[in-house]
Each structure stands twice: as structure tokens, then as C-alpha cells.
Amino acid sequence: MEFPDLGEHCSEKTCKRLDFLPMRCDACQEIFCKDHITYANHKCTSSYKKDIQVPVCPLCNTPIPVKRGEMPDIKVGEHIDRDCKSDPAQRKRKIFTNKCSKGGCKQKEMIRVTCDQCHLNYCLKHRHPLDHECKTDGKPLSKSGHAAVTRAQGASSTPASTSASSSSGSGNTRPVSNGLNSNSRSHSTGSAQRISTSVSAQNVVPPSASFQAGLVCTLFT
Image (cartoon, rainbow, N blue to C red; front, side):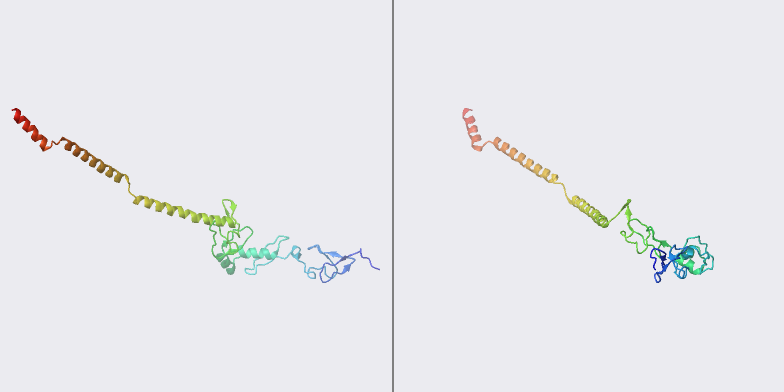
């Protein structure tokens, strides 16, 4: 006789036995049979929460304090990166000192990788402005924004060259008014000479007229 509503199946993937007296793991809170209830038998991933052992740094042999619920491996890694006094750890900290400014990224590089727009340091993975959502004047720049900035930089150099050429061209030109004034002066001088010549021509007495006048004066005298 079967009782399908009684008991629960073991959570171990290789077992799945129906156990009428199931037990719950106090670390991962999963249901197991009597054969897989121990941490080692079901390879419990939360056994560190119940393990009171104090981890020791493998480089300097210093005990690392770990609070309940924290991963010992993570705490040992943080100790090696920051507080370990061993020579290998110190050399590693001296070389890899340039931390990425991208939020959530803890990568450190040997050299500085500075963004040309926001002037912050990033790792090789987030060095491109689009990868770290580069912000200029508080607004992130998209691909079209970067293209617009490039076009603006190219256009800013063009007016400078144009103004320089126009200024040089204006320096080589000469005023035309001087030529016009000289032409007007010469024209007025020529007209004045023609007027004086015509007046003097009108005042000249022909020789025949003067001879007749002299003959008349002789007869009457």
C-alpha cells in the first residue's frame, strides 16, 4: 500500500528517495534523507555558516576573523589584497594600484587608463566611454553624442583658418579713392587749361584788323 501524500523526496539530485521521516539541513534549509543529511554527503554550499573554524592566511599564517554568515574565502582574499604583510602580497599591491572607477568593478591595473572626456581611471575592460557610461556635464554620451563632439571639434578649426585668410587678404588691398582723386584732379586741371586757352584766343586781335585801324588813324591826322 502506497501513501503518496506522506513524506518528502530527498533533495539530492542522485537520490530523490521518498522518505517518510525527512530531515532538513540547518544550513541550506533543504530536505534530505538519512543518508544525505550531513554537510559532506549532500555537498552543502552553506555549511560555512555553521562552521566555526577560523581561516588562516596561507601567506602570512595570520588568523582571519570571519563573522557568522560570511564566506571565509572572500575574507582571506580581502586580507591578502589589503592587510597581508607577506612579500608576494605587498609586491602585488604595489604593482596593481590603479583601481577602475566603474561602479561595481574592483579590477586594478598596472598602468593608468584615463578617459579623455571624464578624466577618470578605468580598467582595460571599461576604458571605452560607452563601456563605463561616460558622463560629461552630468549627462551620459551615446554614440551619436561622441560623433557630434568629433564634428564640433573639426568645425572649430575651420573658422579660424577662414578668418586668418580673410585678414591676410584685406591687408593686401589698397584703397581706390586715391586713384579716383588723382584722376579727378588731372581732369579738372585739363579743363581749366582749355578754358584759359579759349579766353586768351578770344582776346587776340587779328593782324589785318590792326593794320586797317592804323591806316584810318593816319588819314584823319
